[in-house]
Image (cartoon, rainbow, N blue to C red; front, side, top):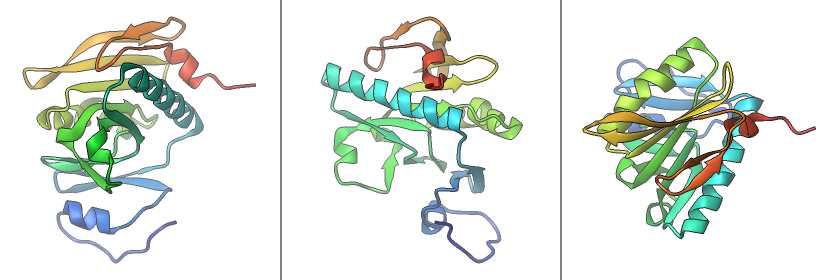
Length: 192
């Protein structure tokens, strides 16, 4: 459901963004004091998100880790509010059914790279420093084009360092934050 709101002038706050309410047609994120809006993701993106969510959920259960996998959750950062495609959060932080999650409770964020040039720039270049500043230890970036690839990064000295690149057509074991095997190509493959 779209929410009509009055014109807004000047910088945004987290409270003002959250007060806009839920809108399944677009995501509203806050980078510093700037409001970022993006449309709902396409089918390929949603297919990949759903399948990756399931793999992560199964991996968490198998490992016994006290964590929960969530899609499109509001993560509060030191200087913003982002909605990663997938977030793995501490189970205690998700227990009360909150609207937001503090970055301290987030173990892993996954960004599925948007097809637009501005979306690619945001997912690849702009968001990672904010996640790093918040101390989120693991960042995965799923590239859909030209062929699916998962770039697995880990926080080291305040910056993300690539640890693994999983390529389509090959099953790769990712060991942290818990073991999971995946083929990025299988995440986007359409069922017949």
